[in-house]
Length: 448
Image (tube, rainbow, N blue to C red):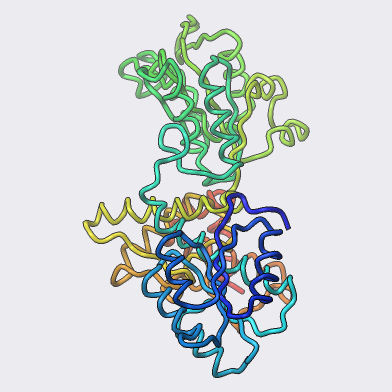
C-alpha cells in the first residue's frame, strides 16, 4: 500500500503490550504516525494533548472499558474516527460498540489486510466529513474563483495561467457540464485583456441563418428587417475575448468564414465587402472530438489546426476525487444565502452516495441537484432518503446486465431529466443530443 498523502495520526489503546507493539509496527510501516496507550485514562490524556485522526481500542480493559472510551471520543472529539477490536467477539458486543459510536468492529484474530482495510475505511470517512465541513470556507485553489484541489484540476489551472499570457487561440475540450466557459473566463480575466469585454457565444444555440450576422454584424439594408446597422459579437469583444462555445456545431460555410477571421484578424459585416480589423483573443470550446469530426469530413482540418494552438481538457467530475465535497459545500452555501436559510449539512451516508455517483452531467448536474435539495429539503440536514431515487440503492432495481439496451437508455434519460428538474434543454446537453432527439426518444418510450 502506498503511503498516505499526509501522515495521519493513529492512537492504539490496549492493555496488552504485545498487541500494542504489533499494531504500532504494522501501522508505522504503512506510513501512519502511531501513538499508544495501555488504558483509557492514558488515551484520554493523549487525545487532549495531541490531534488524533483515528483511535483503535480494545473492547475489554480493566477499570474503564473500550466502550466507555468510544463514547468519550464520540462526544468530545468530533474529528476522530474509531475502530474497536476484541478477542471476545459477539453480536451483542458489536451492537454495543456501534451504538457507542465505533464505525468499525474487528474481532481477533484478524489479518494485517483486515486491519489496514478497517483503518482505510475509517480515515476515508473522516476525510469525507472534513471535506464536507471545511469545503464551504476553504479558499478556492484555482484562478478566478474556480473551486478544486485535485491534481487533474491543478494541471488545468497551470494551463489557464500559461494560456492567459499569450495571444494564441485556445481550444477547450471536455464533456458537457464540466465548466468550459468558466475556464474560458478565467483565461480572459487572468490576461492583460481583463478590463475589456468577455463575450460568450453559443454557436449551437443560434440558428444557422443568423449566426453570421450575430458574429460579424450587419449594415442597414443588408436584409429584410435590417433597419439599422448593428455591430456583431466580434466587434463587441474588441480588445477583449470572444468565446465560441460548441464550435463543432457550425456549418461548413461558417467554418470558412471563421478560418478567414483567424488568419487575417478581419471581419466583414453582412451587407458589405469592406473588411474591418478586430483585436480579439479567440477561445473556442467543444464537447465533441474535433479530430474525429475532421476525419469524418464534417469539420475543416485547417480550422481545427488554427483553433488547436493551445488545448485545455477539462476533466469530468467523476475523475476529480474530493473536489465534489468542495463543490457540494460551495453550491449549498450559495443557494442557502439566496434563500436566506441555514447552510445544509450533508450526512456521511449522503456524501458517500454522491461521491460514488458517476455524474454524467458533471458539475452542472451537481449544481442543479444541490439547488433542488436546498429548496426541497425540510430542515438543514440532508441524508440519503431525501436524495433522488436514481441515486439511492434499490434491491429490486435491475443491475443492467439482464436488461435490453433500450431499457438502459430509457432509465438513463429519466435519471438525467430528474437530476435537472425536468429541464429538457439541460438534459439534452448532458445527454449529448439536441432537444428534438430527446423528444423523439421520450415519445418512443411512451409508446412502448
